[in-house]
Length: 460
Image 1 (cartoon, helix red, strand yellow):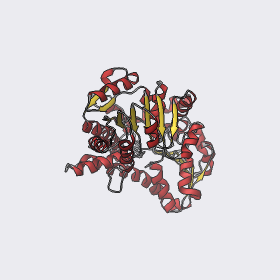
Image 2 (tube, helix red, strand yellow):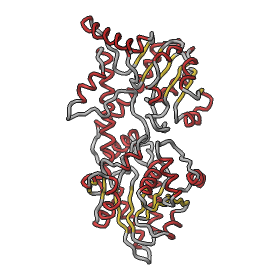
Image 3 (cartoon, one colour):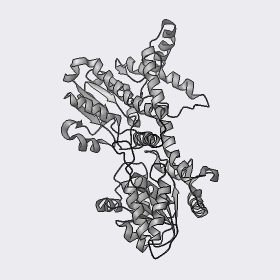
Image 4 (cartoon, one colour):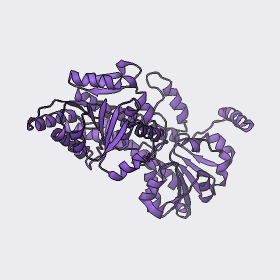
């Protein structure tokens, strides 16, 4: 099929590249000419494993082309589907900023010359598809050439760092539709991307829009739940890893998104939590649990930062703190709402020296903080320069580090916000190691089992 994708951001590029991989003819519309020029040379403006090659292949095979003008593209081409993949950032009150969405829809209503399916793939408030349909119908009614536009809500469920897999092997495709024509087109489009057709879920507009918010709110809730529990585990000398396994094996609960840490970040969870709370307010439904999820997440970040300052006291003013990991999660360069920003801001406020390393996100941090943060090219280069190391992102190259390498840290001190290492193993190397929810007190009856663990590690 011939498809227009409006927006060459994260969502638009992944959507366009994956559809092109299946042989569809994709035109990606993007206003920024510099971004188009970079993309035509195969340069992606952000880090997402595998996407670069997908885009390059699509361009070489002429399945992906670019346009700077949506109105002009709508006049020239005869596309069956138009995807809106523009941004919907948070406003100060938590509402989604819909400026870009309504601009796209207005342009479509004024310039589309033929029948088509208009799909909103961005994360948008409940009621957007219905408002879109009315807006388009009203604009078309004023025109002399009658055409028929169907509307669908088709939210994305892509995880940064594994977006290609998530699109190409979708666990579900949510389709908010209210016409048979839209249903047939979406079934035809998405059948190659799911193992079973029943994974293409049909529902009304409002249900599809709320499904997106509900999914992210549930995942954020699980993270905040285990993080709040981790603080209790520390206080009670319990081990959150054991607790995590103990509840995760329950088939009603499962292990996913129960990894304690320094809190969630990124472009989706914080924004969607705010939008869901704002939506509840608009409908006079208090989203008290969702509000608390955000509060707990902020408390978790602050609690971790406090542990660093409390350990050193006033001496921290004379220390150099190293940070491993700047992106909000591994396999992405996205620093939006990343917990590392909270830590950096707290350290800068006290004029504390910072040395940082991240495999993908350092340039974004450098653009934000300039010379307030020192950067190194390799993770090992950082260790001898700092008094203490703080791990904020669980990149695999961090997890693969030999504990012996940490002994060159001046104070032999590690604050691990992602529980990347075995506390006993690091203690064996005479390292002071703080992590999340694993402040374990070992009674005498347990000392033998710990000793066996130590002996086993020594043998390795």
